Structures are given as structure tokens and as C-alpha cells.
Amino acid sequence: MANKKVALITGANKGIGHEIARQLGKQGIIVLIAARDEARGKEAAAALKSEGIDTRFIPLDVTREDSIAAAAAAIEKEFGKLDILVNNAAVAIDNGPPSKLDLAVFRRTYDTNVFGVFAVTKAMLPLLQKSDAGRIVNMSSGLGSLAQTSDPAWAFAGVNLLAYNSSKSAINALTVQFANELRNTPIKVNAADPGYVATDLNQNRGHRTVQQGATAPVRLATLPADGPTAGYFNEDGVVPW
Ligand code: NAP
Image: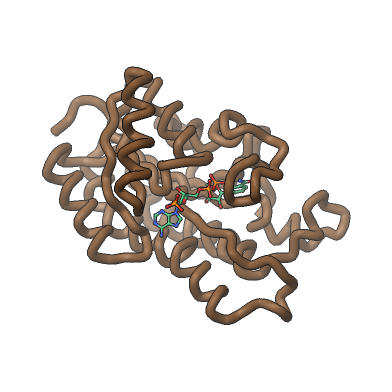
């Protein structure tokens, strides 16, 4: 079993996930760059390697059970455990009000953002249970907060994307349910809101950098033993559910 900590970050070939991998790698953690596309994943891992980070590419499409099982088997074989899981991969593919949303788009969004997170978490849990300090970070969004999105005065209340926003509300619920199940174990499960970050997800319209966006998830991925579980945090602190 590896002495160093091992972290798996899904959708780590670009955007906030790539930066989370970089920041964890800079802390001496072995980072597994999970990506669905081999060329993009290998290139992303090579970029971090050139910065002196101990990293590997691991093929992982979060919508495919065979891919998830193969990734878990590969991690088991090489490391015998997993210390950190960052469920970062997501899509944002709806762009109109709820009444204009295609059912197929709704389903595709949930396949990645909700069922993908569930399936990866379930498959990786036995490996996280072999760590003495397992941490699960689910990338949520401020748009998943019902407290915020139901307030017309909230800065992003106009972003009324049923598929994406509700997928992140579901992730918040998933976070709490897994955290409750694991409360009497060393594993902590929290949701992270990175803020509005310039990435391909929003055609680079966000006003925050990936470095800023990675701050909250990296902190949650490296929480001490007395840190919180079943929480929802951004860089400034607690986000209302
Ligand atoms: P991004 O640049 O579009 O990156 C998304 C990543 O997810 C890509 O690596 C993408 O891979 C991957 N992905 C999508 N579907 C996948 C699948 N089926 N299997 C494996 N990987 C898959 O987006 P981002 O802004 O960095 O988003 C990262 C996380 O932060 C997401 O959970 C997002 O919802 C959340 N978030 C972002 C913002 C923001 O303002 N950017 C705000 C709040 C929350 P490909 O390159 O192969 O497509």
C-alpha cells in the first residue's frame, strides 16, 4: 500500500479539476488525472509531471460502469487504497428556462452530474475505507443552493437552468446522505462551491480564476480529522443549502 496519499480527480484534464489536481500534487499527494478522453488525459498528466508532480492518467468516463469498475480495479492494484476522491466531472448543457428544457438533455445532465457521481463514489468507497483519513469532495455549485436560487435578490437568481442547477441540488443531497452513512468512520464527505470560474463550462465567462475555484475543494480534500462532514462550502465559508 502506498505511503503517500493518493487522490482521484474526475474530469481533471482541464478547468477546475486540473487545477485541483495541481494544487493537491504540489502538496506531495499522488494525483490520478481521471479523464474520459485518453489523449486529453495523458496531455494533462504530462503537464503536471513537468511541474514535478507525481501523477498518472487514469481512463474514466463517469457515465460508464465498465470504465468506473476498471478505474477502481487499477487503483486497487497499484495503490491498494484511495485517500481522496474529488467528484468534479460535470456537464452544463441546458440553456433555456425549465419549460423549454428537453427531457433528453435533462437525462444526459443527470447521467453525468448525479448518477455518475453516485456510481464513482460507490465504486471507490471500499478503497477510501482502506485509507486512515478518506475525504470525498463533491463539486457542487452555488446554483445548487435552493436557499440562494429561490431568492430573487441573489446575484445569480436569473440563471434558471433546471437540469444543471437541480443536478447540483441532488449532489448536495447525495453529499449529506453519504456523510450520514459514514459519520462514524474517518471518511468526511462535503460539497464544494467554486464560485463563478472562467472555464469551458461557461464559455470562459466566469470572473474567478481556476486557482480561486480550486481553493474550497482543495481545503475540503485535505481536512484534518476534526474537520466538518455533511457540509457545503465555498472559499468564504458555509453556503446555505
Ligand atoms: P470544464 O472546464 O468544462 O471541465 C469539466 C470536466 O468534466 C472536463 O474535464 C470534462 O471532460 C469532464 N467530463 C464531462 N463529462 C464527463 C464524463 N462523462 N466522464 C468524465 N469526465 C467528464 O468545467 P469546470 O468549470 O472546470 O467544472 C468543474 C466542476 O466545477 C463541475 O462539477 C462544475 O459543475 C463545477 N462548477 C463550475 C463552475 C464554474 O463557474 N466554472 C461553477 C460552479 C461549479 P472533457 O474535456 O472530456 O469534456
